[in-house]
Length: 81
Image (cartoon, rainbow, N blue to C red; front, top):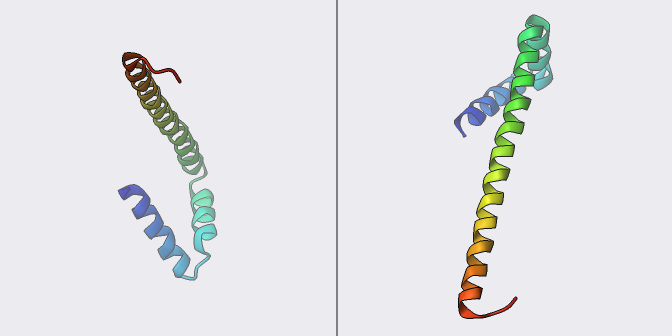
């Protein structure tokens, strides 16, 4: 959470500063460092997709394990679903 808090605090300060807000910060970044800005955007997108995929796979695995556990309990009791 700390990186997002830092980013939001920075953008909030830029927004409250009255000097173009978030759009001004992004435009300044792209204007002064176009290659670095693109790398940050692409890196952030790759990171978002990668972490999202890992979380999705983890949740899917936990749900599958829970279904198997429930089914084994049902089988041991002789119940049918």
